[in-house]
Structure formats: structure tokens, C-alpha cells
Length: 257
Ligand code: KIV
Image 1 (cartoon, rainbow, N blue to C red):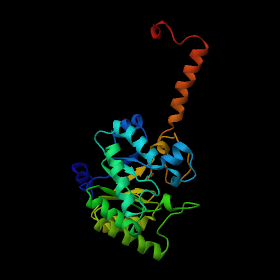
Image 2: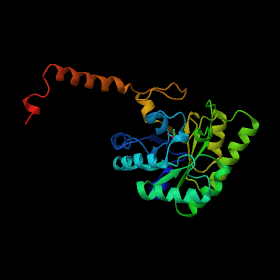
Image 3: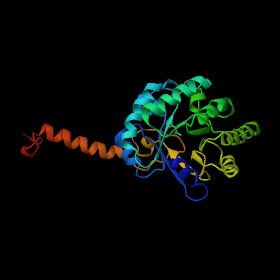
Image 4: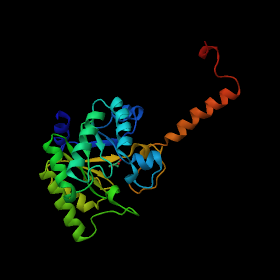
């Protein structure tokens, strides 16, 4: 709970840094710079080439989260509940409890507003911290991903969903691909922090898929800034290994018994 209060208290004071991790070794590095480490179901497309996050299973999320848990020390660890694991109140509670018990994460994230508010209420009543997710909802999107907050109807829905989630106890909300003025307005309207992804600088924090920002995963999504080309370094090391094996330089005496 301490970590969650710390995140909420950052609102209007300092920006919240959130990144994804799918395994221990990346989590260890990510944890040094983040407030929140998210085991996102984006792992479906990033690691398994799934055409949609709907294909991600509970077992996959739990297995990756167990590994991530080993690398996360100071940050809050949040795990995405995959598609179809919170369709009803009963399934949401059963699966959220399973995720918390097996992965020892601090909170879960669910995509949606009014439609899933009863599930969210029940989890929070059972002392399971919940992070919301509004705007573009990959689990509910079939076909092309489009930004949100363009029509009056959409704007009204986003604003009322954000207030509803806050009223029912979520500690933060991810805003995905929401038009700048609307993300700004939602952030201003709320007492809890918003974490933006493609939703402008006006959010209280930002999240990106780590594999995207370090150039490990190739993507041309508009909001992804490539902060590093890590493949260049990986290739340098691998090329050197291959070359030393072929030339009998490796393993030298130093590396032999
Ligand atoms: O699945 C994911 O990684 C996410 C973030 C990108 C917000 O939900």
C-alpha cells in the first residue's frame, strides 16, 4: 500500500515513470528508473507475434510475471489481466487473486470503463489494488488502432469513465492514444494520476513498452520514440563470439578447465 500512496502523492509534484518488463533481467534494469513496472499483455505481440493481445493467456502472464518479480525491487509491480479473465465479477476476482498469489505483484490492470466497473469494485473491496486503462483498449479493438477523443460522444464517455474509475477506487489510470486536449482535461479533472501512452505530455506520467524504446522490437507506432538501438550492441557481441569460435580464439586457456 505504501508504494501506491507514494504514486498517488506524485500527482502535481513529480512525473511518474512506468515501463514494461516481461522477464527478470530487463526488470532489474527497468526498476532502477521507474516508479511502476508493468507486465503488459503487449508481450503477446512483442514476444509471441500474436496478431492481438486477446490471444494472451493467464498462464503466460503469470509465468512472465514470476520472472519479472525476481527483478523488481523498488518499483510498484502491476500485472495486466489478460482478455477474458475479467468478463464477470466472479472470474475477475478468481483470476486477480490467482495473479496476486502466484506472482506476488502489487496490483492488476484492467482495460475499460463503465462496462467493467462492477469487476473493479469487487477487486478493490477485496483489497486488490487496481490500475485503470482508458482510451485505446487493445483487448477490445479489432482491426486498426485509432486515437480516441475525437467525437463529442467519445470525449464525454472518456471523461465520465475516468471519474467513475476514480470514484470506485483505482489508484491510477493509463490513458492510451487520447487526443492532447482531452488527456489534459481528464488529468486536470482527477485527483489520481494519469499515465499516458501516446496521450501527450500533460499526463502525470508516461509509460512505454521497453522493447520498443530500446529498439529491440521493431515498430513504427507514432508515439514510440527510439531512445536506443540496442540491437547494434547485441550484434557486436554476437558477431565477436561467432568470429572467435571460428578462429579458435575462444575458449582460450583462461576460459577452459
Ligand atoms: O500491455 C501493455 O504493455 C500496456 C501498456 C503499453 C500500457 O498496456
